[in-house]
Amino acid sequence: MGHRPQPSSLLAGVLVTYGLVLTVEPKLWSPFAAKFTLPKTGWAGVYTIAIAFDVAAAVLAFFVLRRMKVLVFSEVPARAPLASEALALKAAAGFAPQETAPASQKTALSAPQEKAGPAHRR
Image (cartoon, rainbow, N blue to C red):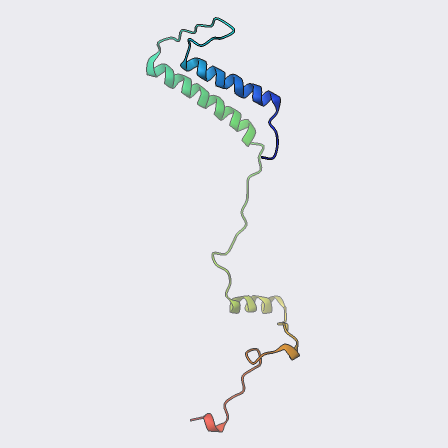
């Protein structure tokens, strides 16, 4: 993987796992004689505790998130400009079209087409 976990993280993981197992199997050995009796609050108590934790999380998130910068996205065109539009924009900005290949490397497709002679006209 890339790094080794800290010993304190391993200890915390072992303690949490032991606590979960002890919750499910209360007859397991524990170094202390802890018998917790929970009040019978019903669903109202469960939802009250859940709401209290939600409020605490919201308050903590407020203090953490308010220091973060808001991402601002620049205006992006919905589509890429067509080649003719790009050339028009360059011409408007004062850029002259440049030759991309030297004259010795021009092909038949890059050379301007000659007009058809009188034999090909109708």
